[in-house]
Image (cartoon, rainbow, N blue to C red):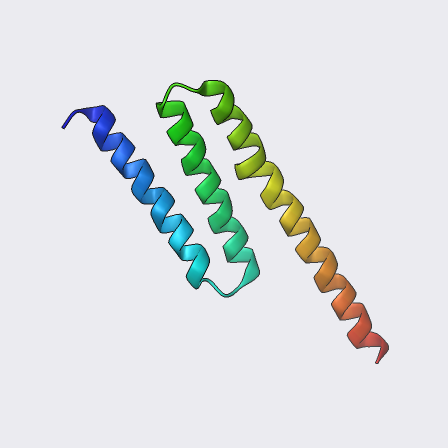
Length: 88
């Protein structure tokens, strides 16, 4: 096995583990982090497959932008929930 195949196997295993962990994690924040890790592995796979433009887009959107949007949304939802509980 050459180094390309070994690295490709490691990246694909990382993607599978990150995707499987999304099924079993019940808390939202760790799920968002696992999704970001999945996006990072996918960006590495695109880079390994010699598609740097797609890898850059995936890194920007899948590993950085989407998790930030989800985290901000989660914080706002929790803040609204806390405000409603305080009003009662």
